[in-house]
Length: 565
Ligand SMILES: Nc1nc2c(ncn2[C@@H]2O[C@H](COP(=O)(O)OP(=O)(O)OP(=O)(O)O)[C@@H](O)[C@H]2O)c(=O)[nH]1
Ligand SMILES: [Mg+2]
Image (cartoon, rainbow, N blue to C red; front, side, top):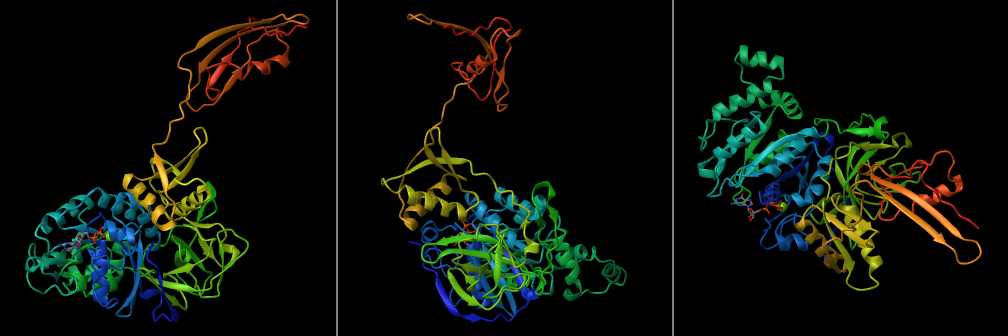
């Protein structure tokens, strides 16, 4: 059974506005230490009293029994907390490529992604994939090199590898010091102890040079007059450099020892973009080719526009939709339309999430992330709005990888067919990379996922969470015959059983058309040798031909089809 969500009623009044919000998703390869980092960051920020452990299954992020058992994140987890007056919505994501759908869907809700790389492992293909996805989506990127305490850490090589893979705009904001027991700041106050490698002064100069390139006035001050530029003066060009991908800052940390974690929190608060500073979300109005880009701004007084980027189906409380408010303010009691629906839904309660804990809040301002429970109309990628002016608004679709591995399933117990159908519906509602197909030709239901691990997790979840146990086997292949080369056929039918006799004669040629080009019937009878009403009988009667891609020809002047009385 899944972990029961804990609810805290009371209605927290938020002490922050849009500019005080930071939405950051932690992404990166499995085992890089994202969940561990969340744990250490929460403790550092004072959001939790003790640091949970992966081995004991007590982390805030991996609260599902399956996650505890496998010691891997299988779903994204929202951790909202306040730190020094800043409201941080930190989202932990799974690093296994099998769960990429769940990772990509949360990137719709953030301005910045923090890509976590292990100092012991370096860059892998998953890191490259998420870096590219974030760049394409116009998200600001930060790289966290974790595990600097590890004996296998090779920070110099990893920094070098990052620059080779993602460009020279990957510049360190801090560097490991004391053999990985801490970090030394290269941006705010670059005057600490010596770093383990490279020079703090050189790193400071590199990053300032990179940022002032975008601001002519600052450049003049800095280069011509040799003035020291303060981090406050650099704030706006720094945000611009992040938005344009002109700078990808790199931070070093250890989730295990806590080294670099206070510095990381400071980077989140002071340097990561707030919702007004990130690239605007790619909202479109209309469908297909007629879709036009529309502007949505984080203005609290305008119409509400919010996007559902995560749905989880909780057996205890039903559907929980997690949304990012892009415009306007949502309050308990707000009436919102889901997509083009004419009838509004009423928001009874609004929640903020910290792992499995759910606390009621009094409002969600633009840029914030909140949750709504028990609204069946909500679905992944739905847009909520409070005016029909915003009907047809949607976010630019995400290019999810198609689930390719299929497994045929049927309930173990007869009579469970409906429960199986309901469960499959729930699984597809939660994960954009799960697909169900019914293969009518062989009467099989096939569950498609990203890989073996994905399918195994889905089957276990069906059993544990919903009590539906299934038998599985590889999907049957509905073999069909097709025409491999042209052939001619001739058949004569004669029947004389007393009274009226029957006679028919057909000349037929079959040829293959191109794959997928359909079926074509060509009547080659000339001169009306066969009366028109007998021609359709020739179509659809040729043995051994695939109706979908065959061309049949009856020969000119030779086809005969007669009925005699
Ligand atoms: N030495 C060391 N080990 C770490 C550190 N951070 C995480 N680990 C270990 O790395 C392993 C994986 O950590 P997780 O936090 O589960 O990694 P993850 O990125 O969340 O992995 P997925 O959920 O599978 O994507 C665990 O055994 C952690 O104890 C670190 O800073 N130093
Ligand atoms: Mg994890």
